[in-house]
Amino acid sequence: MEFLSWLGTACVFGISAIGSAIGIGAAGLAAIGAWKRGYLNNKPAPFILSVFAGAPLTQTLYGYLLMGALQEKLLAGANPGLILGTGVFTGLVIAASAIFQGKAGAAGADALGETGKGFANYLMVVGLCETVALFAMAFNF
Image 1 (cartoon, rainbow, N blue to C red):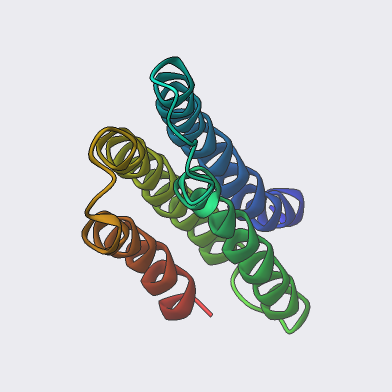
Image 2: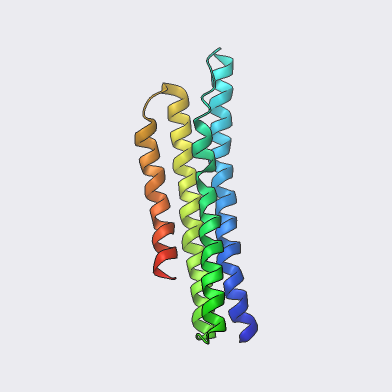
């Protein structure tokens, strides 16, 4: 059971990072497409679209921080099954947040690239997705 509990601490980081990669890929593809449309129409490519592409990266950091906290709890004698469950399920929550943040960022990048308007509104939705990961991390510290 000790091995599985340590695996749980790694899972929170690894699963979070997988979600970040998926989210970054989704938003990044949309940003690249918006830049391409701008170039085709002889319009400037707004660098601000990179904000949408990079937003899901923070979930990897949350997974890393929680991994360290879970390792400290494990060394202090916490229940190994609880550490395993917390690592896996919190990692999944953080990953889902990153994936949907990437999807929201993709829609924002597409809309901003086409209209040049609404950045604050689009960023607000991206931030709401981020909040889920923050809550998951904070409530499991």
